[in-house]
Image (cartoon, rainbow, N blue to C red):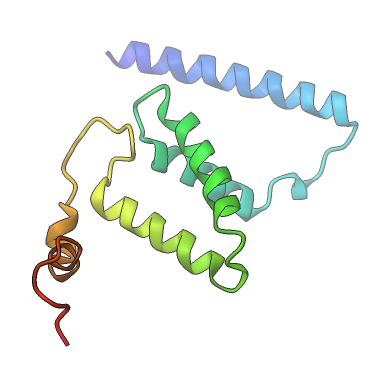
Length: 127
């Protein structure tokens, strides 16, 4: 099994090297500011939102991180609040991502018991 992991690491390194070389040839520029921390964080969020260990997960994560901020762009003052609250709820409910393999998330009704009863038309919101 470790032989296959080493082979996959080698293939990934070769592909990354080739793509970096082609990128530099295409843009004719090399510098340390090509990738700042915001791009790296966005790429990791795309991976984790979609779900690790799946093929379609990062694609869905990329769509989520591109489409959802555009949908809440009308809420200019609250755009980041709405987006990061949705992201936090997604992480709490589905910690392995939308298409992740494990289903060990917390049910939403256990996070907000008063909200679910309010949505059903039951008891009033406490307070």
